[in-house]
Image (tube, rainbow, N blue to C red):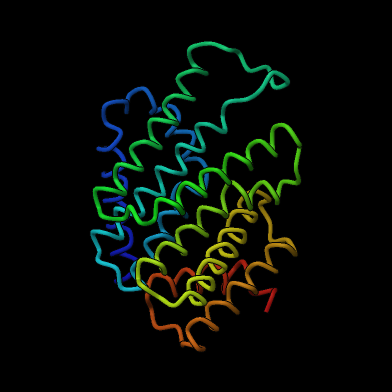
Length: 245
């Protein structure tokens, strides 16, 4: 039942993203098709829905927040496709459009946050977008360690999702920090595994930390079938994490 509801919610997320970007959809379709090949395209909004619903947020609000995070990922993904001189990037209209459409999507995100009354979270999004951009600079200019780049560009989105869900729920400051850390470690486990294609020791470490944080935050709660618990059980306590516990 929960899995079917989650699928229906993800379909609604995709509908919202499409409608928000409808004026430019035919132009950005090529970028969307590329983004769909990345596991983040479905994993991130699924994680957003999981934590928002777990913390008792209304369905409609949770879906719109998942759409906002999906659009944030899409905008950063489009910007990430813009190379530099060393990569043979051609300074043409395609490059200019990629930069401008990414900025346009960020504008749509800010507008949506205000429309749904989530403008108190603008600081989290501005900080996260800055962190993602810093991660891309580290990747292209400083040739940073791939795991460090994932932490800045992908895991930071999961961290922001869990942080905003906890903050919007009015939880205590220390609990918000716990959810923020949980989101980060879940993001690292999922994204590193996807990038490497195998379960490394680093993935196991983040899986184990995710499990510890989840049970600590919930005082050892027994899994009972919510979408967040399914994420923990099926992704982190299952194929990815079994060797770590």
